[in-house]
Every structure is written in C-alpha cells, then in structure tokens.
Length: 321
Ligand code: NAD
Image (tube, rainbow, N blue to C red; front, side, top):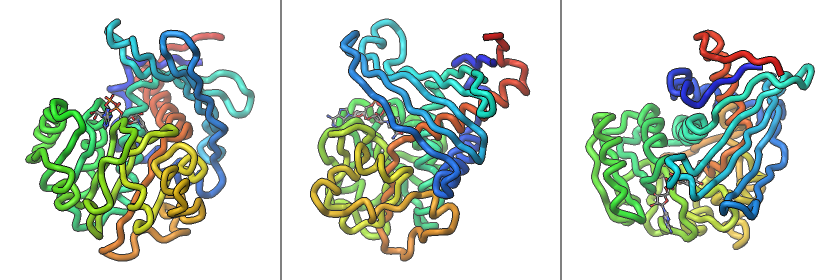
C-alpha cells in the first residue's frame, strides 16, 4: 500500500482537480453508481473527543474506503489541528489496503469544492458579489474556490465573532478583490451568492435578509442541532443537496423538514442537475439553496486523486502490510 503524508498534500492536488473529483462523484451518486454507507460519529468519553468514520464505494471511479477522525478540542494547545482525519483506501477487487492518506487539508479542499460545484450549476451567471457568513478556518477555502466560478468583483462578509473578519479581508486581498464587512441585512441585500460556513446552532441569516435570485451554499451545518439560516428560507427556495438522507438528518434542511416547511421529496440531489436529469435554476428570481452536508465519497474522491498524483511525483511511500 501507499502512504501519502499530510505534509505532501498541498503540492499534490489543486482546487480545480478537487472540483472535478467532487463533481464527478456527485454525478455518480445520482446515477446510483456510488453509495455512501451509514456514518458513525460518537463522543468517545475521552479528551472531549468526537470520533467517527464515513465510508462508501464509488463503482464508477472504483474507489472504496473510509475517512476516519473527528474533533479533539484540546489539540490547539498542543500545536495540533482540532479536526483530525485520515483516509484509508482499499482495492475494490481484493479488499487489500491500497493507501493511507492524510485527510486534513483534503477535507478543507473537498468542502470548498462542493460549494463551488453548487455555484457553477446553480448561481446566476451575472453574479458579481460574493458573500461569506463565517470567518473560521474553512472560510478561506470556500472563498477561493467560489471566486473561480463567477467573475466576482467584490466580497462582503459577516461573522458572529467580528474579530475574525480579517481572515476574510486577507483572503479577498490575496484574490485581488475588495472586501467589506457588512451587517446581515447588507449581506443579503448585496450578495448574489452567499456561502455560509460557521458552527452556529441558531439561525443567523433570516428570511427577510435574502432577496430573489440569490444562491445560498449552506456548508456549516453537518450535525444535528446546528443551524445557520432561517428555516423559512427553505419554503421559498429551490433546494439541492449532496445527499438527501443526510440533508434531512444532519444538514441545514433538518429544521425546515422538522417544521413541516418542506419534505425530503422537495430536495434534489445536485448530481441530478450535473447529469441533466433534473432542472437547476429555472428563473433569475429563483432562490437556489445548496445544503452541503459533506459525504464520505467526497473525501475518497479527492484522496484517490492525491494518491495518483503522489505516485506520479514519487512522494508516495510504499509499505508492505
Ligand atoms: P472554525 O472553528 O475555524 O470556525 C468557526 C466559525 O463559526 C467562525 O466563523 C465562528 O465565528 C463561527 N461561530 C462559532 N460559534 C458561533 C455561534 N455561536 N454562532 C454563530 N457562529 C459561530 O470552523 P471551520 O473549520 O471554519 O468550520 C466551520 C463549520 O463548517 C463547522 O461547523 C464545521 O463542522 C463545518 N464543516 C462542514 C463541512 C461540510 O462538508 N459540510 C466540512 C468541514 C467543516
């Protein structure tokens, strides 16, 4: 098997390659050629840690494996990242382990790729202002991936902790774009595309803030109880997701479904739009909403690309297990 250390990942896969990998696996999921298996996530009763794994098989891409890891809140004090993940790939023909891959940077890249896929397929083509709700670690990745999809001229942002906003300003500056910190009202009034990426447990962006024509990529809610936007927005939006079952259970849609505002049948897998088997945006006034919950197949798809690149570059370490 091959080992690809975390330290090598940055030089191996570009954001564009992650986009292609994630778009392809969303497409395969909608053709029933790729399947995520039930997710395990448990508080282990040690170090306040949440541990779990996500696994799946992409028959189309022949990628089988799992991502394991979770959240260790004490890691920062040790100089380590709180979120930790590692991907294990298996040979689908034999079950033999094929690769062990550092999954931290890949998680950030695949999450950014998912919102970028939604922007490419659902946002208005004349979108010029990008909005960010959230200014944590993941926000910079989401912004960089988003700006590749439309000729954005400006970035506006809001964050629950205003002291974190410089991260958005610096990221925008690095992309050559002006940045403005705004109120939630102005975020909704000025942004054509809004990416939400916070760990909020209550609605921040409200129904009255969002105008017709907006594309929302809701990426922060990946657990029961989390919430970033007003559930009422779902009632007037066209709703898309990576995986419907996960969207209803742990995604942003959980609250709208629980409140009876929409049902699972109102949520469209984005792979259907990619494949042309379901319509995406139908009018300039549609509010399109992508509920990006994060599926294991995204991790496997980008890890497989990283392994191929590492082998080609000669930086994959071969071990006999
Ligand atoms: P981070 O810890 O670096 O940043 C947290 C962000 O949430 C900051 O913007 C912070 O100000 C905000 N926040 C914290 N407490 C809040 C509160 N009470 N109300 C509103 N906002 C609050 O985290 P990150 O790595 O940037 O990740 C952000 C979120 O995205 C997390 O919830 C994480 O679980 C989620 N995530 C989702 C996916 C996916 O595939 N959907 C992938 C990775 C991360």
